[in-house]
Length: 150
Image 1: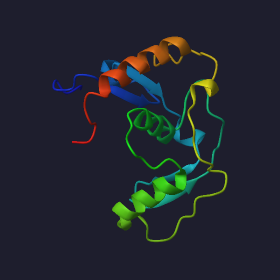
Image 2: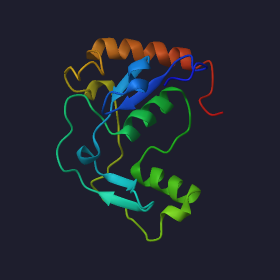
Image 3: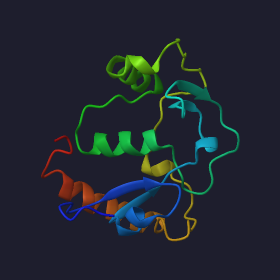
C-alpha cells in the first residue's frame, strides 16, 4: 500500500501490484531472465546470471532506469555494472564470499530517449513514448525540489 506521506511515487516493475497501481509513473522493468548481472539469491549470496531471452517492448533493467533518473536529478551515482558492483561490495562485503567478475557483455548501461523502443502497451504499465517523456519531465521537475536521500 502506498504510504500516505508520499507525494509522488515513481516505480519500476515487471508486474502489477497494489503499489504499482498507486504510482504516479511506472517504468517497465525487465524480468530477471531478460537481463544479465549480479544479484543476491535466496541464500543471500551474490550470483551472476546471463540473459536468457531478449527484453520485450520498452522494458529496461532496473539499474539502467534508476541510474538515468538519478543522473537527471543531478545525483552522483555509479553508472556502470562494475561501479555498481563495487559500491555494493564496499557497503555489503558479507554478500561476497568469492569474487564475482563483471563480464565484458555488461557494457556501461545507457537510457537515452533516442534509443527507447517503439511504443508498445504493457497492460497499462506505461503510456506511449511521448506521454512517458512528458510525465517523466514533470516528475523530474517536481523532484528537483527535494533530495531522494533521507
